Amino acid sequence: MKKHIKIFDTTLRDGEQTPRVNLNAQEKLRIAKQLESLGVDVIEAGFAVASPGDFEAVKMIAENVEKSTVTSLSRAVKKDIEVAAEAVKNAKKPRIHTFIATSPIHREYKLKMTKEQILDRVKEMVSYAKSFIDDIEFSSEDATRTEKEFLVEVYETAIKAGATTLNVPDTVGYRTPNEMFELITYLKKNVKGIENVDISVHCHDDLGLSVANSVAAIQAGATQIECTINGLGERAGNTSLEEIAMILKTRKDLFEEYYTNIDSKQIYPTSKLVSLLTGVSTQPNKAIVGANAFAHESGIHQHGVLANPETYEIMSPESVGRNPDSLVLGKHSGKHAFVQKLESLGFNHVGSDRVEELFAQFKKLADKKKYVLDEDIIALVAGEAAKIEGRVKLAHFEISRQEGKKPKAVVTIELDGEKLVKEALGDGPVDAAYNAVNLAVSDTFVLEEYKLEAITGDTDAQAQVVVIIEKNGNRFIGRGQSTDVVEASIKAYINGINRLYNK
Image (cartoon, rainbow, N blue to C red; front, side, top):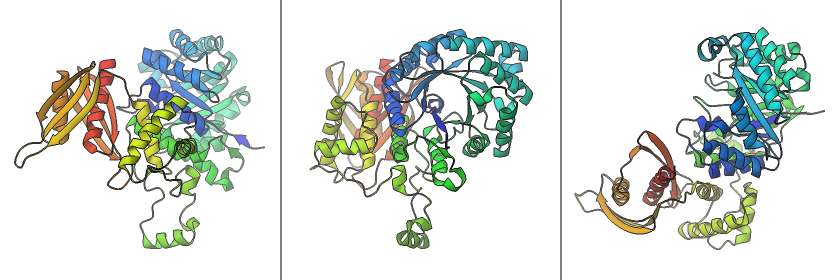
């Protein structure tokens, strides 16, 4: 009988802890629905007690996800558990994920608690969580640097208190695959009752070993892997979902007895959506989803792939949703073809009212581009999710430049419904436009980061601009898309300003 490896996705919680990533509730919901289409078993929707915004996002996801389990993280503290329970109570499959640190360094310097106090807290808080919801995951933070004997006591206490999943985090990405295999084997052998619960691992990539450690844990008997899309996460990131899924699928000779519920053809669309919404680009040589993952430069390699793709490709681009021969849309394409494309990319969860709006945007884009590719459609969905209704709207802009003089921008915006026209000079067209916007809103912002990326190739490609603006110590991300680089830049700037004003 094959063993089901559950995929626990924490893109919306640990992934959002990536520096300078800040998603709003609608963006999180769009990602959650895509994760559901991908086949993720458990979605960690956030840390509900962290802020009112986090609570609302977790609650919204819990109420809208149909198939996946939805969980909120909580410290082993009554208030955290109460808020988490309230946030996920309307989920079809709710879970509370509670944790406490157990390693010597955390006990001494962070918690200032004895082993006995930690065991008492585990018993009390897991039992308390169980009083709200039956499905309880318990994590021993920094488990891989905790004394093995004490770890056994902690996990046995959690099981007796009602935990249904035990998570073993390699919180600082310290262990090697052999050590992870030995630890899971040791726990399976020594923790009483462990055969009745899921064993989970949560590996970080500080030494580049998160995926290898997760694979070793599976081989030792782990039944759940915690991971993120594109390996996003704090510091060096987390285990990459796409790599785990494709390792198990591609190496059937080693992992024939295991399976996941992941629909691998949704991997690339999901990766691209997360990249566009977070503003974090994947490195070109990233396994599975990087731009170069299926590129062949060498003549010898190209000849081999043309003769038989298996000479240099251990998986096909199509198997992960990267299909260069898929239906290409253009300005003559109808709504039926557009809806078919949305469904093939996993966006069948988009409501009919949103489809109408997206189709209208598609038609505008098709007038500017000869062909509208899969990446363009994903970008439209991402852009629609990132859209903020706020005080500021771009109506029109013009850029001009005379020989020997700085560029001039004339920008027309609507501020609280009032049309304003301002002009300004700058070191370039984007700088001039931003200066004009500042004059129009009678405000100034620090532009901490500006990133420009072409969504597809060719000269008519859509550009995505991501900015981070700062005001009074608060940072806000802004995103904008257009076939015009300056327009995308202005849209991103205004998007960030609206997020700031909506705070």
